[in-house]
Length: 334
Image 1 (cartoon, rainbow, N blue to C red):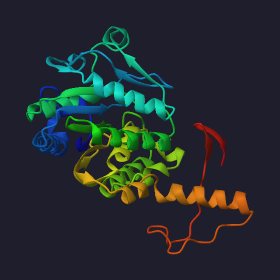
Image 2: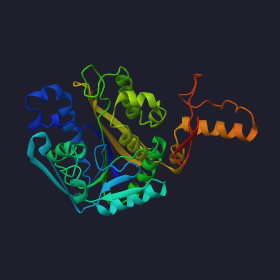
Image 3: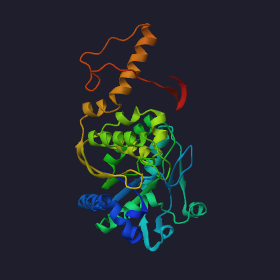
C-alpha cells in the first residue's frame, strides 16, 4: 500500500560530511530534510520507491536497477565512508515495469555490472542524498530505483496513476520519493546560467505541490521548462499521478535557492483511497478533459462547443489555450 510520498532535492552539499563550512548556506534545506525524513520514518515504510533524474537512463525506455542488492556511496563527493547497501524489492520493480509496458512505456532492467561501466557507484546521488537523511532518521526499508523517461508529461502522469493503483494493492508499505532539484538558473552565476523564468517555473512547481494539482504542470509551456533548466519535473509529475487516486495532503517543508538552484522539500500524507466517482474525476486534469471534449465536439458537429455550465472551478476567466495533438506519443498537430 502507498503510505506516503515526498519530494527531495539532492545536492551533495547538504550532507554535513561534504558541505562542512558551506552547510550554513543550505540551513533551511538541511533542517527540512531532517523533519521530512522523520515523518517518513514515522510511517514505517517497508519499501522506498525512488524515481531519480540521475538514475539509470535509456532514452526511449524507462530503466530500473535489477540486481538483488543495491549499493552506492558518496566517494565522488569526497566522502567514501558514506556508503549504502539495500535489498531491491524485485517483485515490485517487475510489477511496475509491467504496468509501464501496458501504457506503451518500454522498460529495461539494468544490472550493476552494466551500470558500473558508465557510472561507478551504482546508486546515483539523486537516490543516495535523500537516503542519507532517511537512514539517519531510522528508516530501514528495501529499495526500488527507477530512472526517468522522456515520454510526454501527460503519459508519465497516467503512468503515475497506474502506479498508484498498483501500490494501493501491493501488500507492503511503500513510500514514493520523487528526487529532483528545480530550476538550475535562478541567479547570475548559477551552474546552468541565468534565466529570469527560473523563478516562475519554481513557483509553478510549489503551487502544484501545495494544491496536489498536476494540471498546473501538464500545461507548462515547453519553452518555460527549457528555460528553467530543471531536473525534477518528471519525477514530480509521476508522483502527483500516483497520489491523485487518494485523499492526500501535502506539506512544503522548505524552499531555497542559495546557489542558483532551487531546492524544495515536500511531503505528502495519504489517508485513504478515493471512491470510484472521485477516482474517475481524477483520471485527467480538467484542462485536458475540457480540451479533448471541445475538439471532439467540433470534429463531430462542425460547431464550437458551448461553454460548460457550471464553468469548472479555476476556468472562470476567458483566456487563450495551446493544445497539442499527439498519437502514440508523437506530435501530430497543435
